[in-house]
Length: 314
Image (cartoon, rainbow, N blue to C red; front, top):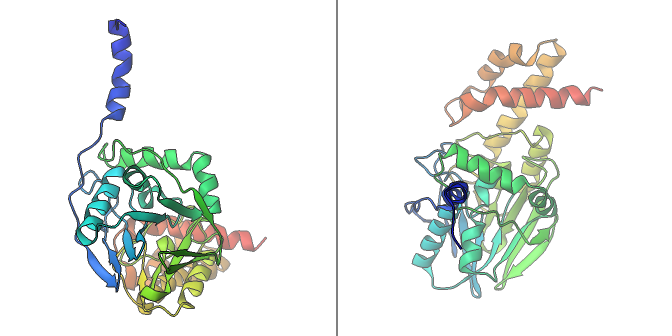
């Protein structure tokens, strides 16, 4: 078949779209449990420099194979996770847990699926629905835009196994408990408890030394999700972003959420608008102003809490 100049020109956007961006450099792996490891992502937003890597992928080695938690926001990040897994074991990946719909946590599924087609990918029922409705494609495009095409080559591979609150999955003899509160950081947020490893993966219900968006969630629900997490008897907690820690790390983020919400409610009663109350709220949150993303997110958080509290008054 002969291709005319016109048809070749029409193919060019497709070829550019299909081109795969370079690999992501390897990031350090730290052991966080007897058989568990974590790759802590940078605190910055997705950029060309970090190639969109910002979350905390984890993996647990079981007698039957490896279970990955949140393999990152691109095929390049997922491939980096697999390289780090291979340094610890030659076992296959048998399952993946996606904590929520935000693509910086799960678009790396593609790398897992390509390397291990039989691996089950778990996510909350609502996440599966959102991916089918196109949220995954929106996140793929967003990551491309924020990183100046550094995630190119990524395709949307969503979860294929649905989970609900209190579901229990046993993989390789290891128990994984699904914890869920509706309308927390989003309405899809799962937390994954691994009792034998004394670990709880919190997703973005908790962040450490970093702030992210609250556009799809509620302060009230997020606080309730943290209450649920703190009922766990595990010793170590993995936030969606930022350093791993114990109960104090979890409580610190909850204090931020509750302080902001309570201060908004107080100042709303005094008749202040969201932008008028901002200086007083920043003063009340002095302990958090050095966290990454504070200046970018605080106004949006105040507005979100303002609308939430205001709606409860009607």
